Length: 382
Image 1 (spheres, rainbow, N blue to C red):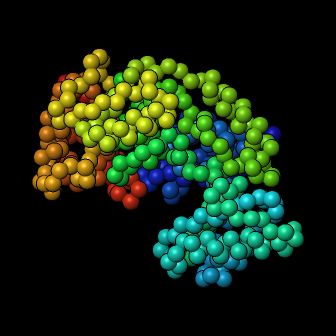
Image 2: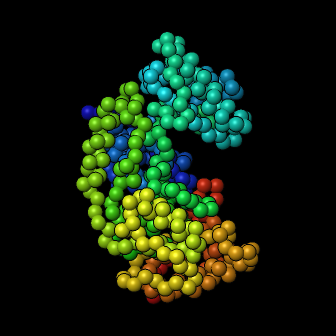
């Protein structure tokens, strides 16, 4: 039996509970909420199953140093050098260090990453007589450092690249939504892929593509590589596990019960959506249309779930806050024609709720990158 691993899955701010519920649904039993993610104790088999199947996790990390004091440049170096890196990589393993800072005495993440890199190289040279090479483009191992004030955490990223990089995004629009946040929004809205779906203000189509992946039961990590397969200690076993996990995931795929609809009134957004849908291999699943949400009729057929991330002000014509309020009011009036459709809206504009003229049954604070938003759920239109 594989030894137990203490892991940390990170996620967008506000989606921690949604990630916890998702992991429990994937069969992970020991899950605990933490700041910015969830911690869980599991085997390598289960960890790689999570990497392939989780739609909400941003990273799956193996912590090596958890919240130790590292004051100043010397403190950073010593904390990193004390890690037994020779147990995790060898002289053939290329690596890169990625650092994030919060309220730190250092003002440049690159400096923090450099000090940690120097410590790793010196420790490896001392332990093995040789040093590993740094590769910032495609490293075999990615070291993730987080420094909050003077408290340092160091982890290894099982996936290497963040899990939101599904591989289908070819073009974006202003303020794009990460794939993992879109999946979290869909989970909060209760979307399971069995009812019709529509996004009348689709931007670059992220919500529609993520909904289509759910509708076809396609694992988001099915077509991507994972860095852990190159790790000296775990690589061989990880390759065997991933082959089995991906084969099972392919066998579980299904035909979408109905066509999903993505609309936008902006031609560039529609073209971006078409390219992303095509890159995801979902051209027969997602129908993309040029249409104005304020005037277009709902699609024919039974009602379902409408989820959208309406403009915050950057994609509308001039008019300031007054113009935004007018748009949100007109949007509410237009959506009254969508009889029987449940509606969920993610918006960062504070004027949205009063101008939309509907009382939500659910309000959930979420963050789209640095933007504080609120996800609002509304009852079906009569």
